[in-house]
Every structure is written in structure tokens, then in C-alpha cells.
Image 1 (cartoon, rainbow, N blue to C red):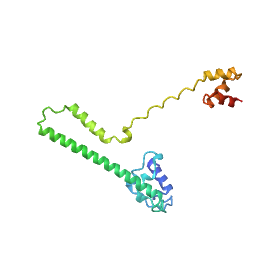
Image 2 (cartoon, helix red, strand yellow; image 1 turned 90 degrees about the horizontal axis):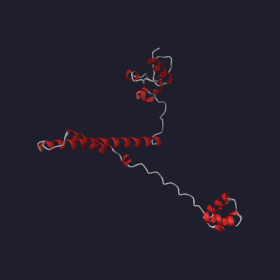
Image 3 (spheres, rainbow, N blue to C red; image 1 turned 30 degrees about the vertical axis):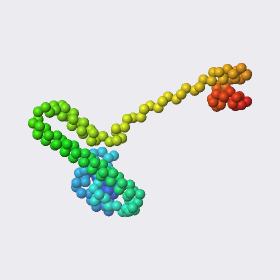
Image 4 (cartoon, one colour; image 1 turned 180 degrees about the vertical axis):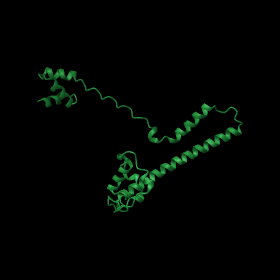
Length: 189
């Protein structure tokens, strides 16, 4: 059995296309154009490889007006707006290039930009048309290093002079008291 026949058999078992008889599928047979478009790897087989007419859904995926319909509508409108924006940008770039050529021809072509300068200009125009706002933002700078903890050297000496010799406990008490020796004493006692 060839690789193509194996893929078609797998599709038949899943009920994605008819034909062949043994699968017992009620779905209509896939057109020849769909069968020739079966992906090269079995892992890549998806519903996208099957024409919409070849799939016979038994029930709607989601009810009309559902959340998914709203999401799909929103996404398709965003894609359409982005595509229209790109088309507008391309039309503007073409119009600018035509006007530049017309101006150069009217000026007689003397004193114009060299080929390298012209190529750089066209590249700059194309880059400015395709750069989105998110791409323009600079990456955030690294956060500043946290400040060093206070030393409390004088306060530690005062506590040692009062008989508190545990330096770790003294440091913790002073940090908790914000350096106030009286409050640190209350925490230590």
C-alpha cells in the first residue's frame, strides 16, 4: 500500500472523506484535488487539508451568536484591517516611487542620487511602512540593583554594650525596628 493510500485510509477511518467502502463512512468522497493535497507527514494531517465540502458535519460546532462566533468575527475583522493597512502602505510606497521617478525625469536626471543611495532610500521607505508600534519600542532597561541593607554598626555596639551578644538576632531586630534601638530592645525581649 503506497503512502498516499495509507493517508486516504486514515482519513476514511476518521470519517473525513468517503470512498473505498470498508470504512462505512456516510461522508461524501473527497474530490481529487483534495486527495492530491494530502500533506507529506502523517502528523501534519488536519481538517485544513480537507475541503469544507468534503466534511459532512452532524451538528454545528457552536450555536449562532455564540462566544466563538464573536471571537471569529473579531479575529477576521482584525486580519482584514491589517491586510487593508498593508495594501494601503504598499499603494502609498508605489505612488511615492512613481512621483519620485516622474520628478527625476522632469529634472533631467542630472545630479540625482546614485544607485546605492536610491536603494538605501527605498529600503528606508519600506522599513518605515512595515514597522509596527510594538517593534519600535526599546526593550526595557534592567531594573536597578536593590539597595544594600543598612549597616546599623552604632546600634549593634549599643546593643552589645547592654549585654545582647547575638549579632544575628540584633541585626534582625534592628532591621525590624528600622534602626530604632528602643524598638529593637522590645523585639529582643
